[in-house]
Image (cartoon, rainbow, N blue to C red):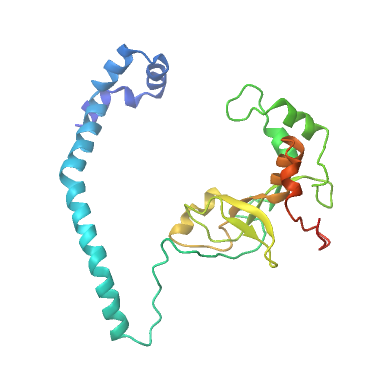
Length: 240
């Protein structure tokens, strides 16, 4: 069956699929909706929403209603045990250190990336890696406006051993004194397994350095008036 279906399908040929999608006309769409794999997927989708999703939703609702009574019974039966609470929609914290990782033999990730890496990735005209001309000029001139580190580099991102997950993007990264030092936005590729098992030697979350955020606001975007409204803590412990 699979050989028959995929043997006649454009989904089994990457070049043919790209050509079909690139054409973007009504004829291409007509060919796509008649494709055996497309028809098969649409049938699966229709079956799921008609036959499976309603019952799944009903059962899940019953389970959620019963889980409260079940947890209450467990707490009464085992009063000496400490049960984890339902932390959904509540404020939560994770902690770690700024550190790189060596997930594979011969592979070493530094804990910091700098503005030099932005220029190295610059590809003019590329939709993913092109940059505004002003940004390129500022970085090439190393016009860091006082936001460079001790080595004279503008730190862009850093990694840490914090246990994060989907939905944590945008969370503030604080130092031991409660100062904002970055903003969490991603995990390394090797860290996606941390939803199942967190490995502190391998899992790293990725944060944008707050100095780069301030540099973009102040130097690149010319919005220094916003920075003036903030209290900046210097590396020496003073404030500005």
